Amino acid sequence: MINNSSLQKWDRLKQKQQDTQFVNTLIQGMNCSQFEAKAILNAVYETYQPFFDNSGAMKPGQVLFEVVSVENGAQKKLSECKMISVVLTLDAGEEDLQIKRQLGVQGLRRHRLERIVNEAFQQGGLLTIEDIANRLLNCGERTLCRDIKAFKDEGIVLPLRSTIRDMGKSVTHRALIVKQWLLGKEYSEIARATHHSVDAVANYVDKFKRVVCLAKNNYEIKTIAFLVKLSPTLTQEYYDLHLTIDAVPHRREELDDLIKKSRQTI
Image 1 (cartoon, helix red, strand yellow):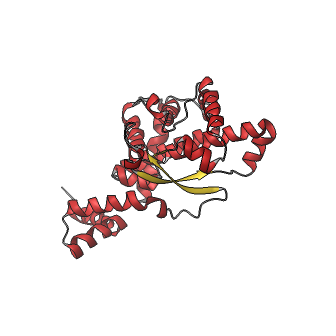
Image 2 (image 1 turned 90 degrees about the horizontal axis):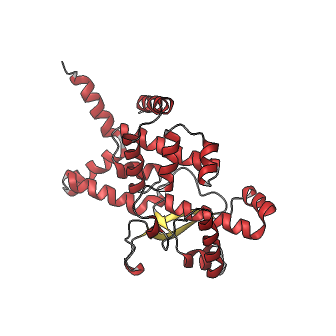
Image 3 (image 1 turned 30 degrees about the vertical axis):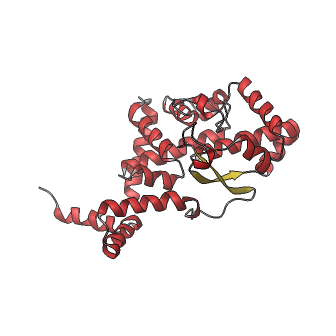
């Protein structure tokens, strides 16, 4: 027998969510259909996402920067491309000072180059060599090309607009990192194998966990992408990994526990 009072409770809780309130306002105030109201909601997310971040101000050393969206095709003219805003870390403080002490000016530049291109890519954007040379790192384009070649010689392909086509439509490096975690490898082991920092690996895995928990609580992909600050494409890729990868038992158990806890807090 269906408990109607329980169903009504969940309906009331749903009505209290801000998304639902916004949709209801559009339906009642503008006579929109449910479909139209949700389409407007998604457009608001896509346009104003960078300005809705209420987790606090950007950290010292970070900038808000306009980049080409990763959704644009490789053959699309730059003037016709969709642009998005991403947060980039130009100066990470003590971390960068340590890098400069150990590796010098060139090492610091390459460290910052790898960081900002991956930050942009993680948020659904692609930097260009022109962006980085003339507006971010203030160096020559030839210098950057040498840096990019040095990374390539080490087996690292940086996600730039000029190189992303070489990566094709295969699984991204972030998804590969998450896949290794699902198969039981530890952060330090993954970091060594993928030339990433342990913190970067932990960040990718943490976002993956949040995507899975929100999806299991019936949030839509675009809403999850907004909440976790990922592109919709990567968000879907993370969730598909959860569905298709045969994770080792202790990783599956860890995810199941997180999902149960997240349901108790909603």
